[in-house]
Length: 460
Image (cartoon, rainbow, N blue to C red; front, side):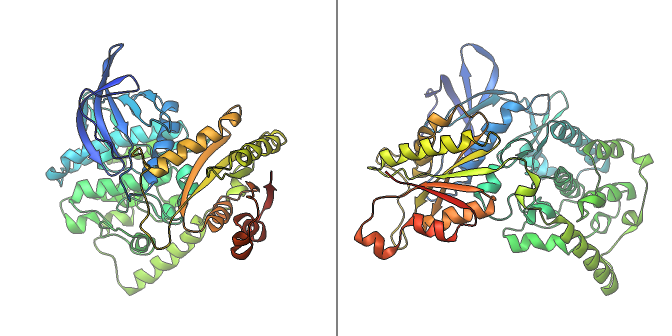
């Protein structure tokens, strides 16, 4: 949505007072409400024309996870809007972002260890609540004036008891290239040790002033960390103590089994360097020769095999029923019949989750329209329509999710979503037959022919 906001505007009962950040996935405003004394911040996840709909997916994810978190290491949740009026209000943390310290790098080893221990405390508290951040980086970390580290932005996070919306809607690695863990590159998002790898990248960066894997921008560049070890920190900054290099390289092991196994253990070592057990990692001053490279490749090849994620159905209890919903004007009766069919199917499977999917069809040749007549982003508007369609299913708490997929071929998009997420049953409507549809082939016919699961077609 491209609407311009100004101080004094009211959204959801909150008055905008000052804009202090504008990013690719949203805008942050200081806001106030008469009955709330604490300082507040509002995140407005509006899409600009042509931008990645990941901002909406991340908004849904954060809206789902943040209210379930507690403690001093996360901002307290206050309120959230819906798809018609999306916003997220939370505590405005009094403190300093780690991104503000980047001009000071490299930092003294003791300062690096102190910051790292505070972040590890925050990660331990988060992991105890069954949440993995998966996008740890300086801009997503604040240090409160009282000293605690606060983790921000849970748009790419994973709650182990909730649907993983980013993974369901996005095919391929998800994260920030400089900090993403090897298992994330391979599509795995269920390991808390991924956050410890990202913290290792941050410690390396703060200790040397350089990122261990540079700033890769594509998935093939991200994959290099599966086979290429970073330069040891002491090669870049010889005065670093061996114990700090030991800790950093321990975090950066390719195989999660070779890393620290908990954030609490990492925090302890950072606070007690005299107790850190030094290994060959501490003494390493180069990447080694050809023999060392071959040994490393063999060892990491075994690690890669262990990192490949299991099929989703093998890990998660309960199946997924996918409702492929046509929201085109004139097909309201068909959409209503589809909702009734989904409700009946769900009644027979109490543990099944309902994934409501609509395909926003893209043009093959013409430039795609990004806004409707009212200036609303089409992706966001369609998501709101989809949620309105699913309102009768709202009696199924925590069992229904909504997904809008932008694609040229709706049938292929539906089939791919079902395959990627191990959908057990697809339910969809079929429009009335016509000469053109008989000639080109219908969406439902292609899904029935090619889907790797059961398909129920609803007709009027």
